[in-house]
Length: 248
Image 1 (cartoon, rainbow, N blue to C red):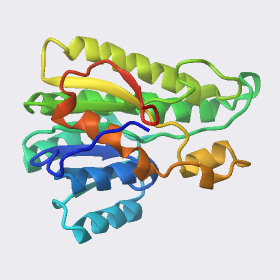
Image 2: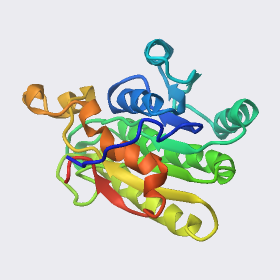
Image 3: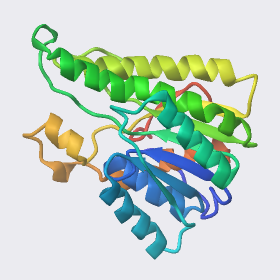
Image 4: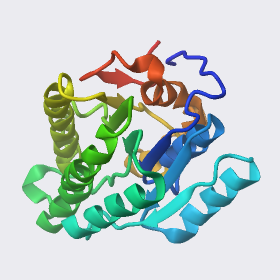
């Protein structure tokens, strides 16, 4: 497991946007960022889940979060522009973006892959990440030290049979991360990296590996050290890297 002892005020006075914040790794990241001082903007498609996370942050005396329901599959550029405008009005700038939301699709050969599901996976896992990140860059430029984190995968480096659109979307996400990191390296205070969370006890993992014993896997909260490190100032010189949350 990546080891990092984050100070309790690591993210004080920072505003961080987390997608897929209602469940799994996104929920754990939102709670963890708030516990280290961040004002967290909770983005996701299920308002009830976001409200539950909101209440958990409030109950733990974290900075008051914000909720922005959004369905990445159907969102338009206008929706991302509206989110950016709301953040600018309410917070003035953005210090961090965690592109965590994603869908698995189906595990089946390319030959028999449903084109509709293929398009859904590429839309949520890649196109939406592009549109959202593009809309947030002007706000991230206003931060003295900003971080963008994309979500990689074990199937984003080497193609694996039957992982179809999910694997392809993750390959492309790593490419997007690298291109953006190179573009922003000398023109801004924004660093761009990706995290491969590894096998983690989430609903998506259970769907992908129905025969696996989830009790053998770490909880999302267990892999948060790398998420904290990349979101905080201690990683200001790390850019364009694909890192593993469960690698020492």
